Length: 139
Image 1: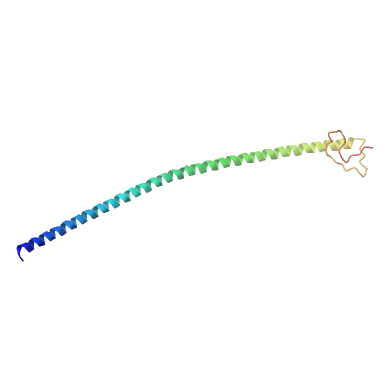
Image 2 (image 1 turned 90 degrees about the vertical axis):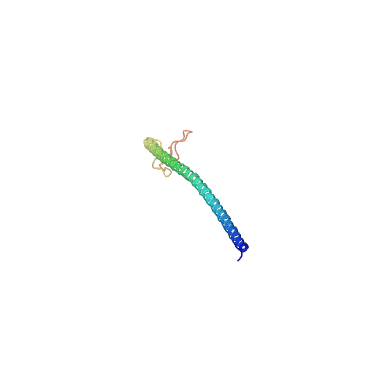
């Protein structure tokens, strides 16, 4: 081998080493870009998760408020039903008193003939026009 061949071999080796170094640098930069993209994606996912967690917390609070509102309304409805039942019972008692008074009035009334076939013992209140209740007969 002469001197020029050795020089050419050295030049070729140096060029190959330079190309290998450039390739290594390019690969490292590409890897760094990929890592940066992954970091950015991870940060975006964390941000989305944080937003979702806030939304979930708000939804939980709204659900609890709706449950409390429903419970209040249920209790209110229960009280209203109790009040209606008491009013109905009061009405029934008053109606029974009225019927008792009418029976007593019919029993005491000398004009009412309890022995007739048409007497039904009706205890409906007298009509507004003053006529006796249906089923009572005057003799």
